[in-house]
Length: 117
Image (cartoon, rainbow, N blue to C red; front, side, top):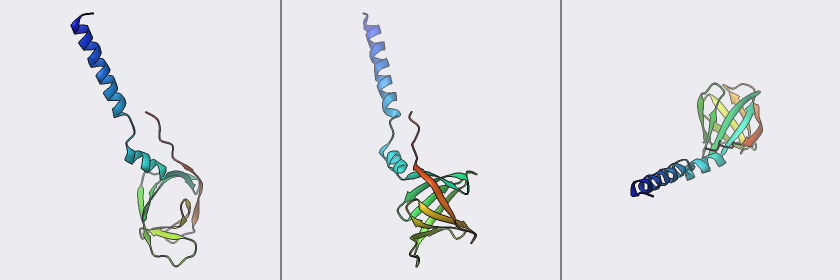
């Protein structure tokens, strides 16, 4: 085997290993996935991310909605709002109401399983 062929093989191996490491999920992404759920809200698929003091919703329309924890006198659980949309409950056991409308429960929540690279 010539020296040039050996260098080519070594370079190919290094590039292959680097690309394998590049596709590995980051720790932050793995932690975020643990707190992300796929739920149904009024018959539509919604992504829900639970953060400390915050609930983030990704609506079917693609709108991202951040709801922030506010004091609640209700025994039903924690209250989150952005002034237009409210969510009350614990964990994924939330009811969501829009502009004071009828509260709709999140249903069928399952953990989000990110696609493998």
